[in-house]
Length: 206
Image (cartoon, rainbow, N blue to C red; front, side):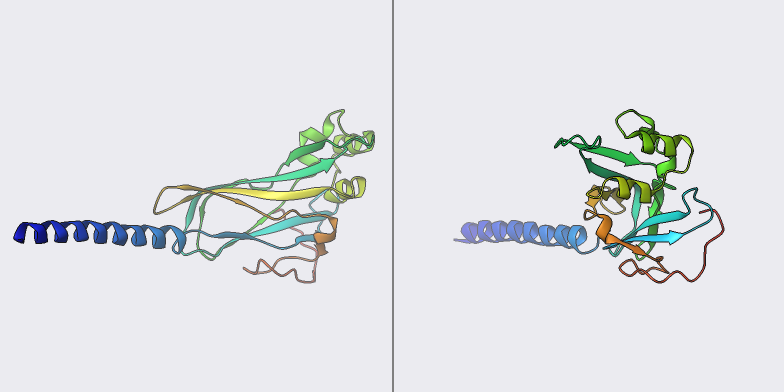
């Protein structure tokens, strides 16, 4: 009888340990982890340092409990029927960015991601209409030109980050932004979900 009790306590101890370990793992990997969120809209502001005269930005914030490391960004445009020939094929273009990686993304901090179409060499290829190619060659291609050329164009931001505690890599993707999601103004402070009225033109290089 004593031997049966010992086995029973052993099994219960093992099960209890497994349950405790699972709960501990779940809390660390679901509650106390980097949690990256995106602005619901794209900010468009007037600037002097971009050739087109306008700067587009998407805000990204870590609302999680831990820092993220080795953070990399990729901003992509999805355009249907690039040549306006009635086609149904989508083209994906990776837009050049002011910054596409950060060593650390602290909890509670926010980044503003700025696309640079005038530095995106893909727009120099024959895939695109001559007007877009010319503006790229002249160094004045802006986001306005892209959304005016393709009214149904979409863009989205992808983020890869490494969790500090577990060392695991996490992937995040923003919603699809279209022309109707662009708002005139700027992001202020660490508020990612509100675009404020622009009160002055920013005259320093980002």
